[in-house]
Length: 435
Image (cartoon, rainbow, N blue to C red; front, side, top):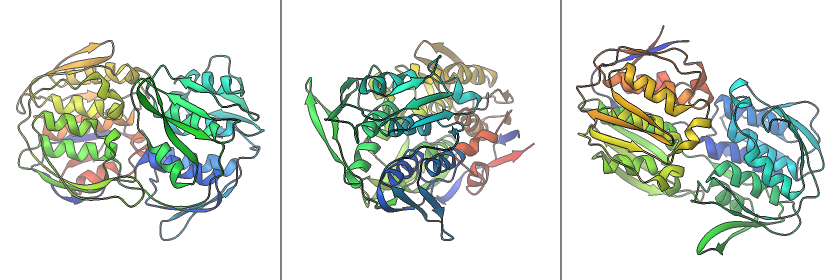
């Protein structure tokens, strides 16, 4: 399905974004590994997370959605041999975390995904898990692959990339490995796995290596708990961006996760002059949560430090869209990971921005956007998305502030992370319609 977005006046209202995708995946997986029942409130019900729910069912857990919207996971104190291929759909998070968790059990499991996921590199988890003792049938280090697990030994692994998916796969494998497992990464990536493992009762802490603290896990049994999933900052990024670029807008985002390792996008917006106020912080599950009030703002270009990239890797496309409305240059670096996401997001963003009349250029590890203010963005283009949900949503937001409407060629994949996106934005006054 194609979607078209156009300017329709200021955005107004209060709204809660969908449940955080990262936390939703982890709650299902850890609940399946745990003994007893885990209750999950506000689980994201997008396609990616539903694939993870189906996967843990195949691996032995009982998963149900109650009429009141609460999901329950009854674990079998570990994974068992699946009866068929585990389909991870479009989800790199689901695939890599499940492979890590499965590797520590005596089973052989075949993992696969859609055409996009089959292109994404899996050697980044195959390498450390192989060092721990898992075996893989994967001639090209991509999906489909078969993991043969069990009898793992703990390791200290220096990851060449800062990736929460790699870190999580190794830590989950370490739950049933002999000895302790330590994961060292160049810059700290999001820490939802460490936080949630502690909530589930894992023996996890942080150890100092080379002057920095890194997560360490020892063999542990998990116990079922109650999990509340706050609103996803990566989803909230889109209404926040729209409110900033559409004149006279004021939007209140309720119940959003404000984990410091997920706020790189919002920190950068503040540096660009954004009017964003945090209210009513509270912290019911070990994750900080807050409400945000966002008002239309006069923005200027910025150069976020490359070391901030892990804290905003999913938000770079929408940051590039916002930068088109700012005055001056925005230079994004340290984001080579964008080239191996659902698409090459660097190439697609630059291509789409240029089609909308915005001056932009590619860098090997990022891009440069030369913004000329809110009235300079022409729009009027049909954007090639290659089925990438974040590319599609970013250009729909851009269309809300541009002179002419913007159309995306495929919006179906938005449901993988943000089901009901168009209706969500329409509730704030946005003009986004199907074609």
